[in-house]
Length: 252
Ligand code: G3P
Ligand code: MG
Image 1 (cartoon, rainbow, N blue to C red):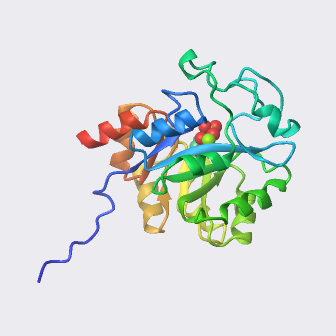
Image 2 (image 1 turned 135 degrees about the vertical axis):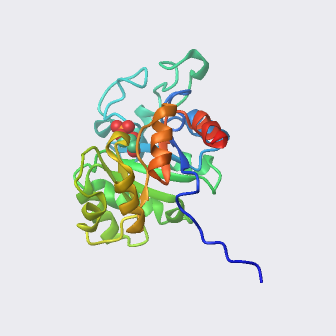
Image 3 (image 1 turned 45 degrees about the vertical axis):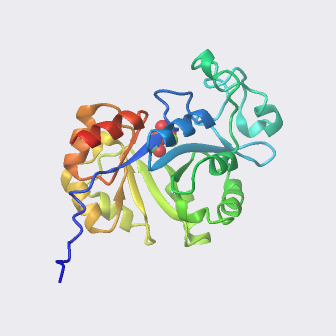
């Protein structure tokens, strides 16, 4: 009889999560950035969403177009047609001229099914976003490839109560006394913790894993940070350089 091999979660490599795609090498939160992250072997990509004036899910980090496009204005006050006229690539490099601010659905359509998508909700627009997001995610086997995260934990709780199949991830930048206990306070199933990468230690990660949580710290971009997180036993690392992280993990 072949011996049953016990899975050892600490022995496996963390998954590579491309932050805003591959934001270190392409204009963040554009289709070019997501495609690059996929080509570089990311298991998951992280992106940020807002709701436009006409109720469309818009992929952008900031609540305005000012920093990452050649246009300006608050997303929640702009019609999606106007948002689509903006160039979201030139600010990064002329090589990316013409990149658009994506609709969320374009990212799902672009990426192969096996790549998971971490949707970070930046602004719930006074809970208006809840229904729009859930309606979209309930279509065509999207829920199983999605983790929705946010710094707004009440929003996550609302979404989870409305859709129990949804995987939720708690984002935070706090030096919590006990990370797993905080997740337990929600009294619902939490899929993952997304702490600031400098605020999670080996004992924190061990406790979280023992509680059945994934641990995906953000945003670690340097080999020394990656080594510390690997040693701590996290299960995923969010990075602007998924290609470099992938190579680094392969060498370990
Ligand atoms: O989701 C991880 C990370 O993106 C959270 O912070 O500001 O980069 O969206 P931020
Ligand atoms: Mg984000």
